[in-house]
Length: 122
Image 1 (cartoon, helix red, strand yellow):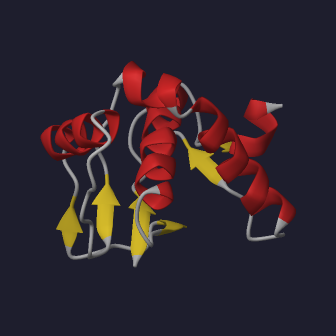
Image 2: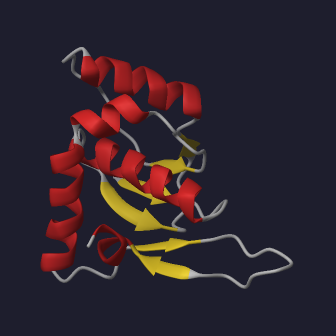
């Protein structure tokens, strides 16, 4: 099942979205993808509920591909899983999968920017 990164917002928002995707992939059989639309969206409230379940050491059941298009700015789940998120990023880089990219939404002032998440990490 695919956990799909939807391009939306600026770089800071995209970093939070990417970390949320890492959390979902690490706790399901999810595979990171970008702009590969799925039939369901995982909204802010649903992600918060999943985060709380994981923080409380409860199992979560994610059994279908989802689009990640919100901002998911919840620090506790990321702080508790910092090392796992870093390893997720490194594993994808070391496995020579296609580059993990974050895209900023273009504005009147700036063109679209591409950043490789591994480069941001290091």
